[in-house]
Image (cartoon, rainbow, N blue to C red; front, side):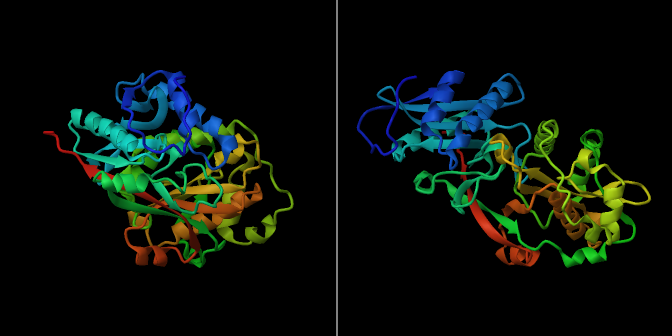
Length: 396
């Protein structure tokens, strides 16, 4: 370890050095010194999981990644990762990323770190860089947080210090605040539109094994889905589904979910689609975070909600009470059949049987605020994140 630094130190005249670092211990040291985590008891866990991720992908030729660490007088003062992810796209085009950007409040440190990222992206003939994109996104999330700092940490949602000057530094360096994302707490437990669920649709659950066996069908649904409710310009496609599945597999081995025998199931069994969905599966083995809609005649998957339990609660050995509603997909040929609302209702009630009572839709692209209000009369905003973008000159 080359030294420590007080987070409040102001800019000095001493030289800043940027190291292209691949030593895992030095990366861990830098993150221990600089990474801000709102819930400190999670910090070492998050760092270890990032190190594991980095150590895995650095061995895979399909990824191109750099870790840059800034030093002043041999003392660590800044950190950033830069990744060219094989499936990451912005508006359908290949794009470079920076993420996990942490530094003391020092413009020159931030500038030199981002110049190193830009040079790396430029050498790979990519014209655009976006950040923060904190791979793996399940762990680090998207964007720089600007609102909702008082909320509990939620797995898959980006976090940072509310007092950070990084947004100002980025704009001074020519980065534009290009995409805004909001997270919304689902406050309405029953959505009335589900009463219109079409008679040719069944709802249900799969086990983790069944889900994995049908993931190609889910990929196809993603290609054919109407995503007007959740338009996202930052897409990682197949990678993102694989990451979600991995989280399901990890938590399915834990046996931490305890059925609440006092939960009022019988009231909801009076509604046909609840009753059928619950009776067709063994709830203790079902993937309860991912309710699905099937076409009755063919058993084709035509809708899904991919929720992720708040793994931060799990890491701290706390009962899981919160769910990140990560993705909603409905086949564009099956819109207007009440699928989205019915999946929401089923998902909330089923998770409630196992003690989960908080649901938050995350990374919702706020391109049209009026549309957001129309789509979500069922919730209220809780957090906001901004992604910054810069075009890179290749001839520099």
